Length: 457
Image (tube, rainbow, N blue to C red; front, side, top):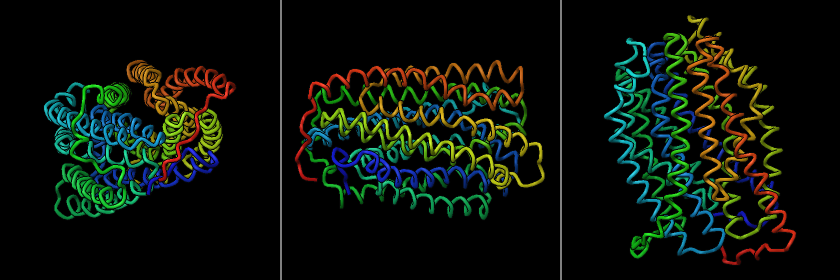
């Protein structure tokens, strides 16, 4: 069911829209969470480290599809807010074409460079074979991941955050069953875990298409919608490419950090893997409120209601900062027991390193909360350049941690990498928002906000 975010109390709308996103993000994290627990407990700590050694490489390429999907959905959300269904369908068709090309690129590059990348990163020799198997299966399934990310993004763009939740829950349940069967019963190792995720996502894509066809008429494309002109690709390409590259740039910083972690040995890789899995689950609410804000801002930008944009950003800032403090306390309190789910009780050194990572990061979640707010705001406004600068700042600071801090401080340097990247990434998008906010104050002051669209939804 679509939802118009251009009318009603901003805070209530954003929270109600974010809650299904939060549930969906939690279930999405359970993909990786489940894989890591099954692999770590049934196959071994080295197998868990092998999966962890692939994370940065996957993020560079698959992360590109996450960013591009969010960027390609912005024109859809703006057209929906303006009540222009014809423009919405053209944006959807153009985004579909861009996504198909991106899927092909990721598959070809990913499969060809999987093992060379692992060697370049200095992956411990005992991890290379399992890590390469995981990467090849993951990249062969890249078209499924791209389709999954794009479809759920455009459904959210028209105000429907429940359908992606239903799809993600179904995919997660399937993934749990498949990974237990492939790894625990059939003994397919880490390659089986990757194949389980790809297959679960494929079935989720089919489910998403069925739901769109049956329940969301705005997203049903007609034959004439595919007759695209060059100008139809302008904004989707600009936003999709810039936001996709932004995620890849962040991913490159993660690759360099992984290089530093690999140099500390298999135990450090396993600790980093387990800690990141816990943290990704913990920060899902911060990401969810940011994603909800991007759709809210894009729809109200389409309606030219700048006062509502400012109100929504302010309220989400306070909400996300409060949530960050609460999450930090929870992660500090429960991080160690959750880490033990991955590695058991027989590796106290791994648990101690993972705990150190979680405590340092949890104390600084407020910076990440602000980063999600301002970055998503600028994306919703169609300002991709500040987000790109933010991504470059994250790249530089993660690289410094990977190449300098780890050499000086060991695993403590790993722990400091993410907070430094959050602060560096926050500065350009925060400056861009406060600059844009001053301009919006003038617009609202002159009474320039246009009436909201009256097209029934």
